[in-house]
Image (cartoon, rainbow, N blue to C red; front, side):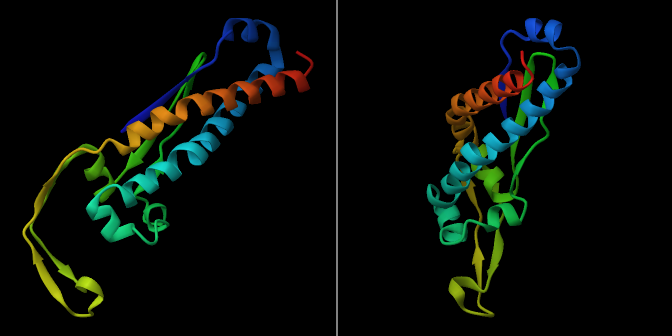
Length: 161
């Protein structure tokens, strides 16, 4: 699992002064952080999986939409404590294997090379770890943190704080 942590600076001041508005900070942070991961991290990870590895190019090189449709790239739950939020990017199946590295067992490839009914035995192989998800999460941290800070600041301004 690849995680991203976001910190709210000045939380003590916010907690003391917000009262009823305080309950709006966490939902604002959750909404903005989740949107940020989908805008800044998931597309880059999807592209990395589909373009930077041979197996990814073969399977998803032309149509990357299958990665989300099949549930192979998902965003984990956003966990919040009073000053820190953490979310995760979950890579399953082959994308997860590409992220962490591992062994593909021997298997048969059906409908190989676009030929219906054609079967080719695959001997299996070892995949090295690519760390696409973690690298993209690290790149996405600064813009997501900025967006969370701006969203919370805007929410506070709207409420006269």
